[in-house]
Image (cartoon, rainbow, N blue to C red):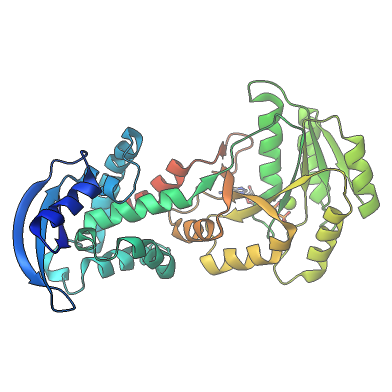
Length: 356
Ligand SMILES: Nc1nc2c(ncn2[C@@H]2O[C@H](COP(=O)(O)OP(=O)(O)OP(=O)(O)O)[C@@H](O)[C@H]2O)c(=O)[nH]1
Ligand SMILES: [Mg+2]
């Protein structure tokens, strides 16, 4: 249950405000009524009512769907673990207010204080600010809303190009996707692979062995002109997956080259997937994104999801940039360790971290 206070010139009006907010939703229980002086020295009636947590969240405009309540229920376990880990709710830790303690906890998990504070602005001054569990539920709900997923969709023919830093798992992910589309879905899609990776010795061979094994078409684009031609030749394929050389953020020449490849293609839409490792730190991910951002990143593929439980940095980046995630890569095994992205999975990992 949550206590909330309303202020108006008369008790009746104060109660009307509470009714207006909660309508018929809530069983309003009147706890206190008293007179207080407002900032301008006027006497006002203040009433305090008690409402259920569900009504309270609904009053904040948070969708009170079954699904959400279930999700909050599931998240509660994680919240309890978080509280325990941070010593929240223990009297000796009570030197800061609940807001500060919750913010610090989430900040330690990789989230950004500024982003969190912005989320709290609309609920400033509410009772929730005094209740750690409610605050956490609310902020987790905000994170959930801030994350988005790009659904797997192969209805229209697609050209997908992986870009990202070196060694992040671009080629491995392409192999997994190729196998997935070719024989692991409701129907067998026609897949072709293209290598722009003309820079690193062995890059073409790495994918070629796999393509041969699976009987998948695999081409190499040695030049920019050839790339546009190749895409024309591969127009009949359901999916064309384009592998690129890993680019360090400081390697401008290579980046420009990749952009030139992209620009050379006028008549086909290329959906660029930024591949980032879940293990990367916020500042690094941001830097990588900024280097690639003028390429018009459509969605993000998160790799090495198995290698860390600390996904707060990643979540901070995704929610701030409003970038959808398309896939999660969860290990080295081809093709098994790839799953379409889901917000639940990311949030679970975030909460599960506290277990360790
Ligand atoms: N644990 C783990 N390892 C991964 C994952 N994805 C890829 N790897 C490993 O990361 C290493 C690099 O993978 P690649 O696919 O070659 O990376 P890349 O981005 O193509 O690298 P470059 O082409 O050199 O830029 C390999 O050892 C992969 O097995 C993953 O999801 N989890
Ligand atoms: Mg590669």
